[in-house]
Amino acid sequence: MRFINQVFAVTMLNILNLPKRIATSTVAIVGVLSVVLVFAAVLSMAKGFERTMIATGADDVAIILRSGATSELTSGFSNEQTLIIGNMPGVLKDGDKPVSSAELFVVVDITKRSNNKDANVPFRGIQDGAFDVRDGVVLVDGRMFETGKNEMIVGRGVEQEFVGISVGDTIRFGLVDWQVVGAFEAGGGSAESEIWTDVRVLQDAYRRGNSYQSVRVRLESPESIDALKEAAEADPRVDVDVSSERDYYAAQAEGLSRFIRILGYPITFLMAIGAVFGALNSMYSSVSARGTEIATLRALGFGPFAVLVSTIIESTLLALVGGLLGGALAYVVFNGFRVSTFNGNSFSQVVFDFAVTGDLLVQGIVTALIIGLVGGLLPALRAARLPVAQALREL
Image (cartoon, rainbow, N blue to C red; front, side, top):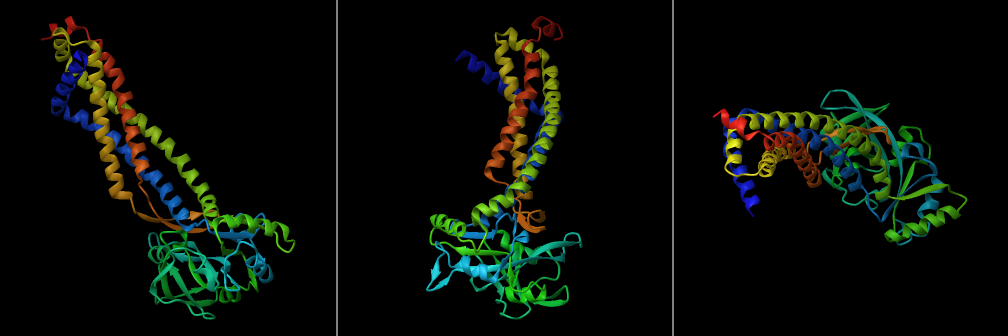
């Protein structure tokens, strides 16, 4: 108990003396703040991208691609094959009609609002069942396109991030003029980064004959995907890969998310080294300025270990303040910040929001505390070893 009382008394004295060392303390706080801010900002990009992709997926919806295809762009089916897939076991039926959508996927160039440069945007041809095999897709402006016409609806993300693609606009892709007649939301999923039209119209516009690239089906239950896979493997008329929508989009998100983390963690580590030196400088200055004060406490009976622990606590508290401020600033500035980035799997842009999540903030605070502990250790050892007689002669 005596030791705890000593630590508490010295720590309170250190905190009360902080205004006298405001400059060095501020340097330490700002250093840690910067580390946490950059850490949260960079990794919130990966979190936001993952959340957008995963929000697109459902366990009771399957995506069927040609065997070996890594994305819709490299897949392909005939009309006959899409009909075979739609009637396989495990696929939900509405009466005698399968709940499915055979789709075509092409990429078009549209000018970004942020830099006035062209970027690739997915242009998807869908069948009537497209809304039935996707959860949370709703028209929020305008109307649905009419079958057989050069009309399209756009995701909210596309409408907000790109020029000339709002409801009522007419835009030219290739040799065809298209009218934007509606806008839709998809619960924050990647579908909001796409443009949709009648698949037959898109086939004609891009001379794709009667071909498709993917088939989406609503399953009778999430477990029904096993029956669908078995049926597809046993049928020689099709050679396909079957994935749940959730697994498919999780795999699509993995590459970019891993790249961001590979980039983000080293940057944070390098900045943390700088912050440690800032904490070292602050605490060494603190120990130097309080040399006689520490010696007086020692002379009054305060143990060296109590001085050591209180100095580490001071450094950790300064780092904690910096971490909390950095986390709060990251949340205010970056959470919900909307951007678009290139998705190498589809060779097109995906619009998503940065996500400063609770686990990121916790990781940032833990990083701040580690910086405080490391930055305060050596100055704390110096304070504990400070010769009492020498410091008292300076009074």
